[in-house]
Image 1: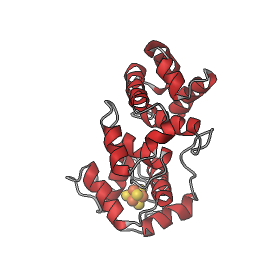
Image 2: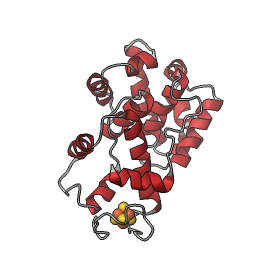
Image 3: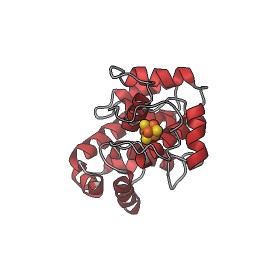
Length: 219
Ligand code: SF4
């Protein structure tokens, strides 16, 4: 919590996940889930361009994405990179929602463990993508681990080399109050710290976590 407070003191509350339609609407939830798949292996600016293409084509709904040909979908999401693979992954996710009845709000409105299992069963949805959907679209408390989280907390000695996604997630969830709003903003603060300071080569001077013990030469 002290590390979170230091980051929030620097960056302010981040207000994630950026969704034009708002996370409380079916369109917003669809947009967040689509964004969680599109952001794999690319930066958010590219994802925004792909989502804007989908919005202009009036395609940010389960029905529209289900009806769309994979080649057309791949063309619209081209700016996000790996567009053929991601089009297949989006189709896999949308098929899972359709098979469950087609209502994305009902699909997401389930106990965390059940929802997580359903998402991880989708080909192309791994733990980070599933947890992003659960946290940001479903608004349920699951901690998201990404490459920035691993790098920062390894350099601060709180994660070990052998820790995997599950052990890292368990470490945060044991250390923090179970609160979706906190988990939401904590992850956003970690991304801001990773983006501006804890790069491949650490820039510790002025970093909000500088006063916490660290080894900047860590992996
Ligand atoms: S840049 Fe330095 S102080 Fe900041 S998180 Fe990385 S290791 Fe810690």
